[in-house]
Amino acid sequence: MENKMQKFIDHIQSTVPNRRIEKSDLEEFCISKSLKKGDVLLSMGTVCRHYYYVNRGVLKVYYFNEAAEERTGWIAFEDYFFSELESFTRGTPSRYEIVATEATEILQIHKNHIDLLIERHDWFSKFLFYNQQETILNLTKVIELFQKHSVKDRYEELFKYPDFIKKVKQKDLASMLGMSKYSISRVKKLE
Image 1: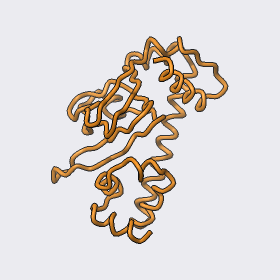
Image 2 (image 1 turned 30 degrees about the horizontal axis):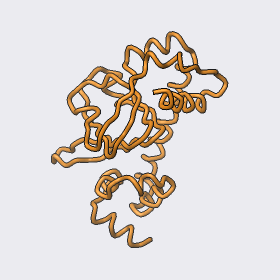
Image 3 (image 1 turned 90 degrees about the vertical axis):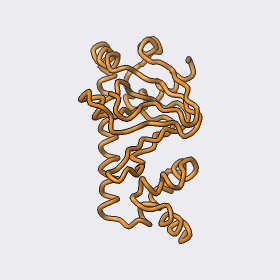
Image 4 (image 1 turned 60 degrees about the horizontal axis):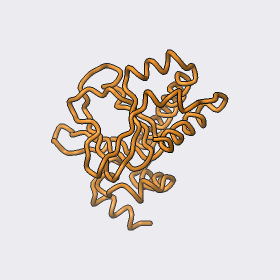
């Protein structure tokens, strides 16, 4: 777990650079977990009680719409720290499922441990705050992209993030962009 923990520490340090974070500050709170392709990390209807840090691999966050069609909400790649925030914060059953789309290694921190880390280390509060700010900024960018830009522009925006194109199935990209898999094929042909 040494190497996995160091990667997470480096991630925190990049967010809160003026703090010295020791492995001993985190190791009692982090649980390492390996997932195979198709393993479910969080099931719909269960309460999310963890934050997750993706060391390696890819996680798909999805839900089902009113017509029972699967919709990809987000993809979490390496070096991403997140939770199913509504369920985690409110203690409500999750409307989302989180599944590994390839072999994935994560660190997870239980809600009780998040609270302890906040109490013990001011740098962790700052890290969570900055992490949430970044998440909100990214969400705002996505909303704006959907409101102001064409499907082709949305697809081209993904080229700034090569992992989306390389590691995500076309049907999941299409779902995330609000288009059919046939539409995404047509957009790709325009390239």
